[in-house]
Image (cartoon, rainbow, N blue to C red; front, side, top):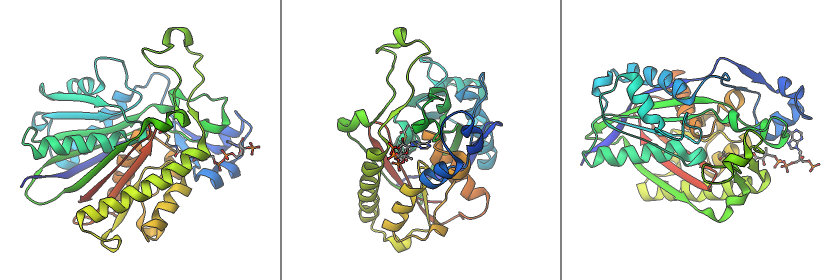
Length: 322
Ligand code: ACO
Protein backbone atom coordinates (compact mmCIF):
# COMPACT_ATOMS: atom_id res chain seq x y z
CA UNK A 1 0.00 0.00 0.00
CA UNK A 2 1.14 3.52 -0.78
CA UNK A 3 1.14 6.14 1.94
CA UNK A 4 2.02 9.79 1.83
CA UNK A 5 4.90 11.25 3.80
CA UNK A 6 5.87 14.79 4.76
CA UNK A 7 9.28 15.41 3.18
CA UNK A 8 9.67 19.15 3.74
CA UNK A 9 8.21 22.04 5.71
CA UNK A 10 8.43 25.82 5.59
CA UNK A 11 6.91 28.93 7.08
CA UNK A 12 6.60 32.64 6.52
CA UNK A 13 5.57 35.31 9.02
CA UNK A 14 5.04 38.97 8.11
CA UNK A 15 7.69 41.43 9.29
CA UNK A 16 5.43 43.61 11.39
CA UNK A 17 4.98 42.44 14.98
CA UNK A 18 2.16 43.78 17.12
CA UNK A 19 2.58 43.26 20.87
CA UNK A 20 -0.09 43.23 23.56
CA UNK A 21 1.24 46.62 24.65
CA UNK A 22 0.53 47.95 21.15
CA UNK A 23 -3.05 46.69 21.50
CA UNK A 24 -3.44 48.46 24.84
CA UNK A 25 -3.22 51.70 22.83
CA UNK A 26 -6.07 50.66 20.51
CA UNK A 27 -8.67 48.96 22.72
CA UNK A 28 -9.54 48.72 26.42
CA UNK A 29 -7.38 45.71 27.24
CA UNK A 30 -4.19 44.79 29.05
CA UNK A 31 -1.15 42.67 28.37
CA UNK A 32 -1.99 40.77 31.55
CA UNK A 33 -5.58 39.96 30.43
CA UNK A 34 -4.47 38.80 27.01
CA UNK A 35 -1.63 36.65 28.32
CA UNK A 36 -3.59 34.97 31.09
CA UNK A 37 -6.80 34.38 29.07
CA UNK A 38 -5.23 33.44 25.75
CA UNK A 39 -1.46 32.91 26.04
CA UNK A 40 -0.82 35.41 23.23
CA UNK A 41 2.04 37.89 23.74
CA UNK A 42 2.58 39.12 20.19
CA UNK A 43 1.37 38.41 16.66
CA UNK A 44 2.60 39.09 13.13
CA UNK A 45 0.40 41.36 11.01
CA UNK A 46 0.69 41.50 7.24
CA UNK A 47 1.29 44.79 5.45
CA UNK A 48 -1.70 46.54 3.95
CA UNK A 49 -0.67 45.60 0.42
CA UNK A 50 0.53 42.08 1.29
CA UNK A 51 -1.57 39.16 0.07
CA UNK A 52 -2.01 35.63 1.35
CA UNK A 53 -0.47 34.19 -1.84
CA UNK A 54 2.68 36.27 -1.32
CA UNK A 55 3.11 34.74 2.14
CA UNK A 56 2.36 31.26 0.73
CA UNK A 57 5.03 31.62 -1.94
CA UNK A 58 7.69 32.44 0.67
CA UNK A 59 6.65 29.48 2.87
CA UNK A 60 6.50 27.18 -0.17
CA UNK A 61 10.02 28.11 -1.30
CA UNK A 62 11.39 27.11 2.11
CA UNK A 63 9.42 23.82 2.12
CA UNK A 64 10.54 22.99 -1.44
CA UNK A 65 14.20 23.62 -0.55
CA UNK A 66 13.78 21.50 2.57
CA UNK A 67 12.29 18.66 0.50
CA UNK A 68 14.84 19.07 -2.29
CA UNK A 69 12.14 19.46 -4.93
CA UNK A 70 11.83 22.00 -7.73
CA UNK A 71 8.71 23.50 -9.30
CA UNK A 72 8.76 20.85 -12.05
CA UNK A 73 8.43 18.06 -9.46
CA UNK A 74 5.14 19.35 -8.03
CA UNK A 75 1.85 18.13 -9.52
CA UNK A 76 -0.66 19.35 -6.96
CA UNK A 77 -1.22 22.52 -4.91
CA UNK A 78 -3.87 22.72 -2.20
CA UNK A 79 -4.27 25.73 0.09
CA UNK A 80 -6.45 25.89 3.17
CA UNK A 81 -7.46 29.51 3.71
CA UNK A 82 -10.37 31.74 4.67
CA UNK A 83 -8.64 34.82 3.30
CA UNK A 84 -7.63 34.18 -0.33
CA UNK A 85 -6.32 37.04 -2.49
CA UNK A 86 -9.34 37.01 -4.77
CA UNK A 87 -12.70 35.28 -4.97
CA UNK A 88 -11.35 33.69 -8.13
CA UNK A 89 -9.01 32.54 -9.54
CA UNK A 90 -8.39 30.33 -6.55
CA UNK A 91 -5.24 31.10 -4.59
CA UNK A 92 -3.51 27.82 -5.42
CA UNK A 93 -3.47 28.73 -9.12
CA UNK A 94 -1.78 32.04 -8.28
CA UNK A 95 0.83 30.20 -6.19
CA UNK A 96 1.32 27.53 -8.87
CA UNK A 97 1.91 30.11 -11.60
CA UNK A 98 4.18 32.40 -9.57
CA UNK A 99 6.33 29.50 -8.38
CA UNK A 100 6.72 28.24 -11.96
CA UNK A 101 4.99 24.94 -11.22
CA UNK A 102 3.75 23.37 -14.48
CA UNK A 103 -0.03 23.15 -15.00
CA UNK A 104 -1.44 20.79 -12.39
CA UNK A 105 -4.34 20.18 -10.01
CA UNK A 106 -4.60 23.34 -7.92
CA UNK A 107 -7.43 24.38 -5.66
CA UNK A 108 -8.18 25.99 -2.33
CA UNK A 109 -10.55 24.98 0.41
CA UNK A 110 -12.10 26.83 3.29
CA UNK A 111 -12.59 25.20 6.67
CA UNK A 112 -11.60 28.17 8.87
CA UNK A 113 -8.93 27.19 11.40
CA UNK A 114 -9.13 23.55 10.28
CA UNK A 115 -8.23 24.49 6.69
CA UNK A 116 -4.73 23.03 6.69
CA UNK A 117 -5.85 19.74 8.27
CA UNK A 118 -8.58 19.44 5.60
CA UNK A 119 -6.04 20.31 2.87
CA UNK A 120 -3.46 17.81 4.12
CA UNK A 121 -6.06 15.08 4.43
CA UNK A 122 -7.27 15.77 0.88
CA UNK A 123 -3.75 15.72 -0.57
CA UNK A 124 -3.06 12.46 1.29
CA UNK A 125 -6.01 10.84 -0.53
CA UNK A 126 -4.72 11.99 -3.94
CA UNK A 127 -1.28 10.56 -3.20
CA UNK A 128 -2.72 7.26 -1.92
CA UNK A 129 -4.92 6.98 -5.02
CA UNK A 130 -1.87 7.48 -7.23
CA UNK A 131 -3.31 10.69 -8.67
CA UNK A 132 -0.53 12.93 -7.34
CA UNK A 133 3.18 12.33 -6.89
CA UNK A 134 4.29 15.47 -5.11
CA UNK A 135 1.87 17.83 -3.40
CA UNK A 136 2.45 21.30 -2.03
CA UNK A 137 -0.01 21.78 0.84
CA UNK A 138 -0.45 25.15 2.50
CA UNK A 139 -2.34 26.72 5.37
CA UNK A 140 -2.31 30.51 5.25
CA UNK A 141 -4.22 33.57 6.39
CA UNK A 142 -4.28 37.35 6.30
CA UNK A 143 -6.94 37.00 9.00
CA UNK A 144 -6.13 40.38 10.55
CA UNK A 145 -7.72 41.93 7.46
CA UNK A 146 -11.05 40.54 8.72
CA UNK A 147 -10.52 41.76 12.27
CA UNK A 148 -12.50 44.64 13.71
CA UNK A 149 -9.75 46.56 15.54
CA UNK A 150 -12.36 48.18 17.79
CA UNK A 151 -13.60 44.83 19.16
CA UNK A 152 -11.42 43.78 22.10
CA UNK A 153 -13.18 40.41 22.27
CA UNK A 154 -11.59 39.32 19.00
CA UNK A 155 -8.85 41.69 17.84
CA UNK A 156 -6.38 40.50 20.49
CA UNK A 157 -6.57 36.90 19.32
CA UNK A 158 -5.48 36.79 15.70
CA UNK A 159 -2.30 36.96 13.62
CA UNK A 160 -1.15 36.33 10.04
CA UNK A 161 1.22 33.83 8.45
CA UNK A 162 1.66 30.90 6.08
CA UNK A 163 2.89 27.34 6.57
CA UNK A 164 3.70 24.80 3.88
CA UNK A 165 4.51 21.12 3.60
CA UNK A 166 5.56 18.93 0.69
CA UNK A 167 4.15 15.40 0.67
CA UNK A 168 5.22 12.49 -1.50
CA UNK A 169 4.33 8.78 -1.85
CA UNK A 170 6.04 6.35 0.48
CA UNK A 171 5.92 2.62 1.17
CA UNK A 172 5.93 3.36 4.91
CA UNK A 173 3.59 5.75 6.72
CA UNK A 174 3.93 8.74 6.74
CA UNK A 175 0.46 9.97 7.30
CA UNK A 176 -1.17 7.18 9.27
CA UNK A 177 -4.72 8.52 9.47
CA UNK A 178 -6.83 11.64 9.06
CA UNK A 179 -10.12 12.31 10.81
CA UNK A 180 -12.26 15.21 9.66
CA UNK A 181 -15.53 16.48 11.08
CA UNK A 182 -17.97 19.37 10.85
CA UNK A 183 -21.31 20.39 12.31
CA UNK A 184 -23.11 23.58 11.30
CA UNK A 185 -25.46 23.59 14.26
CA UNK A 186 -23.25 26.05 16.17
CA UNK A 187 -22.64 28.35 13.21
CA UNK A 188 -23.79 31.43 15.15
CA UNK A 189 -21.02 31.03 17.73
CA UNK A 190 -18.24 31.87 15.27
CA UNK A 191 -18.68 33.49 11.88
CA UNK A 192 -17.90 36.40 9.61
CA UNK A 193 -21.14 38.24 8.86
CA UNK A 194 -20.57 39.08 5.19
CA UNK A 195 -19.89 36.88 2.17
CA UNK A 196 -19.93 36.89 -1.61
CA UNK A 197 -23.64 36.11 -1.90
CA UNK A 198 -24.66 37.70 1.39
CA UNK A 199 -24.60 41.43 2.10
CA UNK A 200 -21.21 42.08 0.47
CA UNK A 201 -22.29 45.10 -1.55
CA UNK A 202 -24.20 46.75 1.29
CA UNK A 203 -21.53 46.12 3.96
CA UNK A 204 -18.66 47.66 2.02
CA UNK A 205 -15.70 48.08 4.32
CA UNK A 206 -17.91 48.49 7.39
CA UNK A 207 -18.44 44.79 8.06
CA UNK A 208 -18.48 44.23 11.80
CA UNK A 209 -15.53 41.81 11.84
CA UNK A 210 -15.28 38.29 13.22
CA UNK A 211 -18.28 37.41 15.42
CA UNK A 212 -17.45 35.03 18.22
CA UNK A 213 -19.04 33.84 21.44
CA UNK A 214 -15.64 32.92 22.82
CA UNK A 215 -16.60 31.07 25.98
CA UNK A 216 -19.03 28.78 24.12
CA UNK A 217 -16.54 28.15 21.30
CA UNK A 218 -14.04 27.26 23.99
CA UNK A 219 -16.29 24.59 25.54
CA UNK A 220 -17.23 22.92 22.26
CA UNK A 221 -13.59 23.01 21.07
CA UNK A 222 -12.30 21.26 24.18
CA UNK A 223 -15.07 18.64 24.12
CA UNK A 224 -14.82 17.92 20.39
CA UNK A 225 -11.04 17.87 20.16
CA UNK A 226 -10.80 15.59 23.17
CA UNK A 227 -13.09 12.98 21.67
CA UNK A 228 -11.66 13.13 18.13
CA UNK A 229 -8.11 12.78 19.50
CA UNK A 230 -9.08 9.65 21.45
CA UNK A 231 -10.85 8.22 18.40
CA UNK A 232 -7.83 8.93 16.18
CA UNK A 233 -5.49 7.04 18.50
CA UNK A 234 -7.96 4.17 18.99
CA UNK A 235 -8.53 3.73 15.22
CA UNK A 236 -4.79 3.71 14.56
CA UNK A 237 -4.16 1.22 17.37
CA UNK A 238 -1.74 3.52 19.15
CA UNK A 239 -1.78 4.66 22.76
CA UNK A 240 -1.29 8.09 24.29
CA UNK A 241 2.14 6.91 25.46
CA UNK A 242 3.18 6.22 21.86
CA UNK A 243 2.78 9.90 20.92
CA UNK A 244 5.98 11.93 20.77
CA UNK A 245 4.41 15.30 19.99
CA UNK A 246 1.11 17.13 19.97
CA UNK A 247 1.01 19.89 17.34
CA UNK A 248 -2.27 21.65 18.09
CA UNK A 249 -4.13 24.54 16.54
CA UNK A 250 -2.97 27.62 18.43
CA UNK A 251 -6.28 29.28 19.36
CA UNK A 252 -5.79 29.61 23.08
CA UNK A 253 -3.19 28.26 25.52
CA UNK A 254 -5.94 27.02 27.82
CA UNK A 255 -7.49 24.86 25.06
CA UNK A 256 -4.00 23.52 24.28
CA UNK A 257 -3.33 22.72 27.95
CA UNK A 258 -6.62 20.92 28.34
CA UNK A 259 -5.89 18.82 25.24
CA UNK A 260 -2.45 17.95 26.60
CA UNK A 261 -4.01 16.94 29.91
CA UNK A 262 -6.57 14.76 28.17
CA UNK A 263 -3.76 13.00 26.29
CA UNK A 264 -1.62 12.72 29.46
CA UNK A 265 1.09 14.65 27.65
CA UNK A 266 3.38 17.00 29.59
CA UNK A 267 3.54 20.46 28.02
CA UNK A 268 7.17 19.70 27.10
CA UNK A 269 5.74 17.39 24.42
CA UNK A 270 3.42 20.04 22.97
CA UNK A 271 4.52 22.56 20.35
CA UNK A 272 3.22 25.94 21.50
CA UNK A 273 3.56 29.03 19.31
CA UNK A 274 0.45 30.93 20.39
CA UNK A 275 2.59 33.36 22.42
CA UNK A 276 4.45 34.48 19.28
CA UNK A 277 1.88 33.96 16.51
CA UNK A 278 -1.58 34.35 18.07
CA UNK A 279 -4.34 32.45 16.31
CA UNK A 280 -3.33 32.35 12.64
CA UNK A 281 -6.36 30.20 11.73
CA UNK A 282 -5.48 27.77 8.92
CA UNK A 283 -1.78 28.66 9.16
CA UNK A 284 -1.39 27.77 12.80
CA UNK A 285 -0.74 24.01 12.57
CA UNK A 286 1.82 24.09 9.71
CA UNK A 287 3.56 27.05 11.37
CA UNK A 288 3.84 25.13 14.65
CA UNK A 289 4.98 21.98 12.85
CA UNK A 290 7.75 23.87 11.07
CA UNK A 291 8.84 25.60 14.29
CA UNK A 292 9.06 22.24 16.10
CA UNK A 293 11.03 20.58 13.30
CA UNK A 294 13.43 23.45 12.65
CA UNK A 295 14.32 24.05 16.30
CA UNK A 296 15.23 20.36 16.52
CA UNK A 297 12.54 19.18 18.92
CA UNK A 298 10.54 17.10 16.41
CA UNK A 299 12.77 14.43 14.90
CA UNK A 300 12.47 12.06 11.97
CA UNK A 301 10.63 8.86 12.87
CA UNK A 302 8.60 10.42 15.69
CA UNK A 303 4.83 10.10 16.05
CA UNK A 304 2.90 13.37 15.91
CA UNK A 305 -0.76 14.22 16.40
CA UNK A 306 -1.87 17.41 14.67
CA UNK A 307 -5.32 18.79 15.48
CA UNK A 308 -7.47 21.83 14.75
CA UNK A 309 -10.90 23.29 15.46
CA UNK A 310 -12.53 26.29 13.85
CA UNK A 311 -15.53 28.12 12.44
CA UNK A 312 -18.26 25.93 11.02
CA UNK A 313 -17.65 24.26 13.34
CA UNK A 314 -15.01 22.19 11.61
CA UNK A 315 -12.41 20.00 13.25
CA UNK A 316 -9.83 17.41 12.33
CA UNK A 317 -6.75 15.43 13.24
CA UNK A 318 -3.81 14.04 11.30
CA UNK A 319 -1.67 11.31 12.87
CA UNK A 320 1.71 11.24 11.20
CA UNK A 321 5.08 9.57 11.57
CA UNK A 322 7.64 12.06 10.36
N1 ACO B 1 -9.34 42.66 27.30
C1 ACO B 1 -9.97 42.82 28.49
N2 ACO B 1 -11.15 42.28 28.76
C2 ACO B 1 -11.74 41.56 27.80
C3 ACO B 1 -11.15 41.35 26.53
C4 ACO B 1 -9.91 41.95 26.29
N3 ACO B 1 -9.25 41.83 25.14
N4 ACO B 1 -11.96 40.59 25.78
C5 ACO B 1 -13.03 40.30 26.54
N5 ACO B 1 -12.91 40.89 27.75
C6 ACO B 1 -13.84 40.82 28.87
C7 ACO B 1 -15.24 40.52 28.44
O1 ACO B 1 -15.89 41.70 28.03
C8 ACO B 1 -15.82 39.96 29.72
O2 ACO B 1 -16.15 41.02 30.57
P1 ACO B 1 -17.51 40.99 31.45
O3 ACO B 1 -17.34 39.79 32.34
O4 ACO B 1 -17.47 42.29 32.16
O5 ACO B 1 -18.61 40.82 30.46
C9 ACO B 1 -14.66 39.21 30.35
O6 ACO B 1 -13.48 39.74 29.72
C10 ACO B 1 -14.71 37.70 30.16
O7 ACO B 1 -15.02 37.43 28.80
P2 ACO B 1 -15.11 35.93 28.28
O8 ACO B 1 -15.44 35.93 26.82
O9 ACO B 1 -15.97 35.10 29.20
O10 ACO B 1 -13.59 35.43 28.50
P3 ACO B 1 -12.97 34.02 28.31
O11 ACO B 1 -12.25 33.61 29.52
O12 ACO B 1 -13.92 33.03 27.70
O13 ACO B 1 -11.83 34.31 27.21
C11 ACO B 1 -11.49 34.01 24.82
C12 ACO B 1 -12.21 34.80 25.94
C13 ACO B 1 -10.03 34.26 24.99
C14 ACO B 1 -11.97 34.53 23.49
C15 ACO B 1 -11.77 32.50 24.96
O14 ACO B 1 -13.14 32.28 25.19
C16 ACO B 1 -11.34 31.71 23.75
O15 ACO B 1 -10.19 31.64 23.40
N6 ACO B 1 -12.27 31.01 23.08
C17 ACO B 1 -11.97 30.11 22.00
C18 ACO B 1 -11.59 30.81 20.73
C19 ACO B 1 -11.39 29.76 19.63
O16 ACO B 1 -11.00 28.63 19.89
N7 ACO B 1 -11.72 30.11 18.41
C20 ACO B 1 -11.70 29.03 17.40
C21 ACO B 1 -10.90 29.30 16.30
S1 ACO B 1 -11.18 30.87 15.53
C22 ACO B 1 -11.61 30.55 13.88
O17 ACO B 1 -12.04 29.49 13.53
C23 ACO B 1 -11.52 31.71 12.89
